[in-house]
Image (cartoon, rainbow, N blue to C red; front, side, top):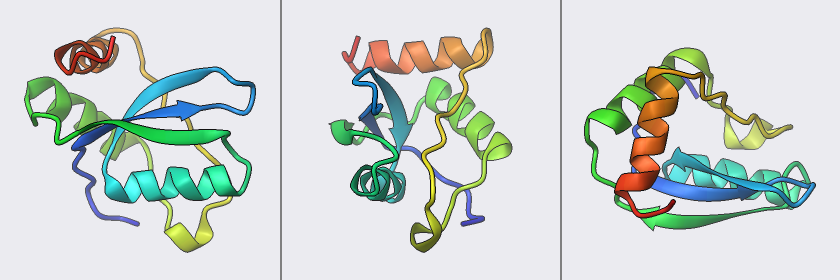
Length: 104
């Protein structure tokens, strides 16, 4: 899927080892995560916040993800790719989003 992805939700991803983390996404990316859970690539996914405000931090994180990763077609999902959150601007934006949405 080559289209630019706009993020409007936060989901909790549970890895197969039982540890979990939060990730931004949208309904399409949630569908990818659900497919990965059904196929055993991750243990589970759940949406924890819908309709997050599209502020500066979300835009910065969204731009980084869209320029760094490609988005698979739902029909060709064969793995779950956990997105890196490099120290600095990106990690700060990610943490601010979670804080602003009362997730952490």
